[in-house]
Structure formats: C-alpha cells, structure tokens
Image (cartoon, rainbow, N blue to C red; front, side):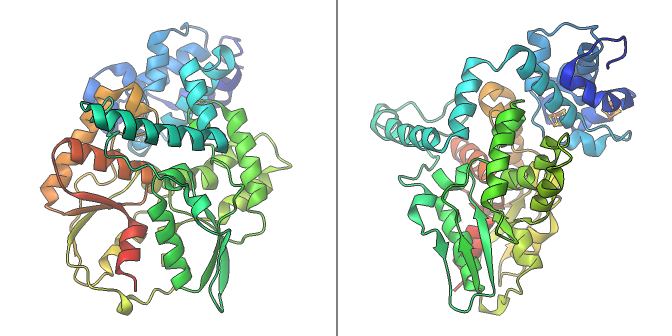
Length: 417
Ligand code: SF4
Ligand code: SF4
C-alpha cells in the first residue's frame, strides 16, 4: 500500500526504493540522457520523484510522465553512482509495468514486442526488412539511415542461424556438451557470430547444441512492462535448456535477462523460484565460459597485427558484471595492440527501442562513443553485445569513419586455427 492509502499495483512493490532516494543528485552526472537533454525528469532523481508522485496518488499519469519513464536507457549507470543504494532502472521497470497494467501498451510497441516475441513473426519481419531494403531503399537512395539507425549497413541474414546449423555440432571425444542460447540478433543478423561461437567451443572439445525451439529471452517485453509475455518465454526457455549444465550466450542482453531478470520475474512464485535461480546459475556469457571453463591454448593462435579497443555493453558490465574476461582474451592474442577506450562502459545509445523513440538523444550519445573511439586510434572495436555491434558500427559508418566493430567471438574465431 502506498503512503496516503492509495493502492497502485506494481508500484507498491518498489516503494522502499522510492523512499530511499534523498534527492542528492549524484545520479545526474551519470545519466547520459540527462546530460544530453538537461531535463530533470530525464535524470534518475527526476524519474524517481515522478514515480513516487504517481505511487502516492499526488501526480496524474500524463505524456510528461510517460516520456520520463520511456526515455530511460536502463543502463544502470545511476545505480552505480547512487550513494543510497537506489536502483532507478528497477523503479523505471516497475513504472513501465504499471503503465502496461493500467493503460496497456501503445499499438506500435504492442506490434513490435509481439513480433519479436514470436519466432515465426520475427523471421517474417527480418525477411521483409531485408527485401524492402534491397528492392526499395537501396535502389531509391536517400535511405542511408532511419532516425540515426543505419538501415543500409545493418546486416540481415537470408537464413537464420538456427536454420543454418544442425541441432548438434559435435566433436570426437567431447569433454562437455553445452546449450547455446542464440538470441534474436545473432539468429537473424549476426549469424557469423553464431558460427564463431560454435567454432571456438568445438575447437576446445565441447559439443554445442542449438535447440531449435528456443524463444526470445524476453528482454524487449520485460523492458516495456509486459512481464506476462516475458514470463511465458522464460518458462519455455528454462524447460528447453533443462538438460544442460551450461547455457552459453553471445549476447549480454540475453545473458543478463536469463541470468538475473528471470529471478526477478518469478520473485512472487516461491515454488518455482529455486528452479529459475538454478537455471540462472548455469548461464554463461561466451567470454566468461571460455576464460573460466576452458584452458585456451593461446600458443596456437594466429598473429593478429591490429590495434583494437573494447566497448563494454551496459548489460555486460553492469548487468553481468563481466569486464576482465574479454580484455584478458584480447590481450592474450599475439601481436595485438590493445588500447583502452575512454568511458568504455558508457552506453552506446542503442538501448533497444530507445534509439528509435528518442533518436536525437540516442544520436548524441552515439556521437560521444564515436569520438572516444576515434581518440584511441584503434582500427577495430570489439564488444560482446550484438546490439552494440550494430549501433556503434552504424554510427561510425554514418559519421564517415572506417573502423570495424566486431563481436569478440568473431575476432577469436579469426585468430583460431
Ligand atoms: S543519486 Fe540516488 S539518492 Fe541521489 S538523487 Fe539520484 S537516485 Fe536519489
Ligand atoms: S538507467 Fe541510465 S538512462 Fe536511466 S536514469 Fe539511470 S543513468 Fe539515466
């Protein structure tokens, strides 16, 4: 029950966090959205106070409130900066759930989330996008980008990764068998990365199973308050990967969802929660799995004579808390020249649908990333998040830069014999 006796469904669950905020404003310096727009309702402090106002029944939900709630990147940078232990991104998620419960999703988001959540519709959407781009946009010209999203340069695979590979990629005398959670981006847009992950694991005597029935991890639905659909997908995935002791993913957003968010989703189901938590414990990001579980023989790597830098995605660094592993892998490659990126763990501006709804702010955030990359002098930017690969590569291309952005697995597969 909210203070003032007004019950406000999902917001009641996060009241503790709302009252913990002492309005100090440390979060302002951390928030890229606030820095770009200088609007107090776009900083964590402002968002938290607005949510509290609605929870207490003192503020009505209006467009201003919805914009404040929907313009959050969920990057978690404010949570790191907050001295009072407030987790504004969790409060924003609760507010989005509240909006979904009280008003439903707007039609455009309903359509997008429904498409991403359904394997058949998703496949159809990616195929349609590819055909439209090839037959229309590329011929007419002038369609280089859509609101700062590089529609021309973004790869879309003709055949999804899951349809390209057998269900089991096995090797003789395998030491272990793992389940590979592919994720939507790798499946439809970066199938090369899927093959790289299988190649490196197979080369280290690990059988890789790609369950054909896997479904979207639920990140987009969870991010926009549709917890019910996210839970439905979570249940399916937990069942599908039940037989494996390790589930590998090459997408940090999927990884953070499978590993951490599933437990939050089922916090109110004590009978099922232990199974969900056990599932979370066996989820590994690719970089984490190969540094912790495989004794990589770096002596067999090919020489890689290039200058590279590394971008930590938000879900990788603050979601999964993985920062050392990818750097360790990169630095182990012979002759590589590794240079650290300024603000390497700051958001690149993608943040799911944020980049299309708040595109001016997203472009501003991406520009800063491009500038920091330029300052390193690196030829190649490595990251472990497929969405960051697209956003950073697109921003570089649209800015006329020729640096390449690759997934860590692709770089490793290239230097691997
Ligand atoms: S840093 Fe934390 S306590 Fe301070 S204003 Fe921001 S959310 Fe509130
Ligand atoms: S999660 Fe990121 S975008 Fe959202 S309030 Fe915090 S710092 Fe700002």
